[in-house]
Length: 286
Image (cartoon, rainbow, N blue to C red; front, side, top):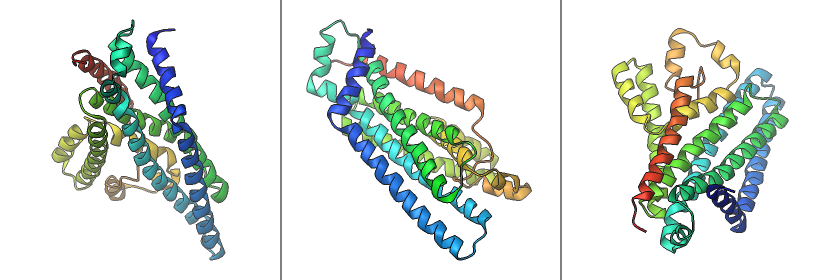
């Protein structure tokens, strides 16, 4: 078995040994249960009050989108604090030096760590996201038009964060790398909101400048894919003219999925940043 696959397998075993997988499973059950309980109570109250089913379905979709938004932050922080110590902790503890004394390349360490942690974070995003959607659908009857698309973009977004944290961990301490990654995620989301407002106000030149700045970390663009997957088609069909322009400023609304060039750019971003992580680790004195 190639060395990087061995390291990936050991990374998953390490996560299980440290009870990370168990903790993530418990958090998933608790969050899905609380969401289902809250939405069920809200829907029951609305139906008993005579609210039309159409408005209940629209409200359920917005609750689901907001839950996905909060979950995206949880995923971002999970990915950041999984990736941040992946290399830094190995260097500080001397594990990296012990590994490199064997026929293991520094590239194997980076790729192996990334593959193992990516498997954990993608599984967590997929299982938790689908369970959340299923729970809301069970109590409200609302099923998003593209649940797999939404969960896929959530997982993709978490991979971006994991990769950034891994890059930073080749040069910074684990705490510093995690903090920088989380702040970068928040700043990118804020830039996305500013860019949407700029488009709504027809400040096209400034909107292009903001979009260029936020492209350094393509998480906000992928977030629009999550919203598109969860949003009911009716809310898109009723928008025309000025209303469609105004809704461009809403970070919880998307009239279309991210274009293919942007998705390809995000995939290329992953490859480039992983390659940069390998290059930086190869030039670090251990």
